[in-house]
Amino acid sequence: MEYKDILNKLAPCGLNCYKCFANSEGGIRKSSVKLQELLGSFDIYAERFSSFLPIFKEYPSFKALLTYLTEENCLGCRKGSCLYPDCGVRDCYEDKGVDFCFQCDEFPCEKTNFDSHLKQRWIQINNRMKEIGIESYYQETKDLPRY
Image (cartoon, rainbow, N blue to C red; front, side, top):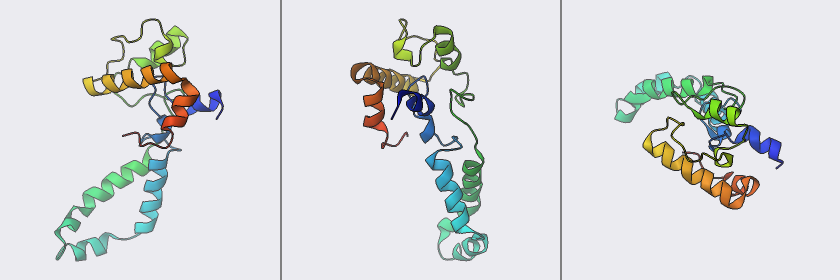
């Protein structure tokens, strides 16, 4: 895959935008749309099944979440806006003129506004990209789940 194509998939923080639940072209959204189509008018059956399979009482909540996953339309952090509240990476990478955080002379920094779990993941991802290169990192992770 060419570098410019990788930039369309990987966010400046290193997370794979294409695998995000909110990405309009991503697998989660596409699979959710397909599942919604396959289920069709399953509501009446879920109600019927709930009398002997109690888990189906949760179907309305499941359906609401599934509907939400089909309606997301993010184009990725480089083309839209990050869904992470108060993400500091988007503006920072543009200001610094880098493609990824590890390319900045201040990496790692405190500008991300990430919680501790995401910050740790961000550091690991960027260190790995720095170690093996962006193209190799993409190849190494392209088939792994994001979450």
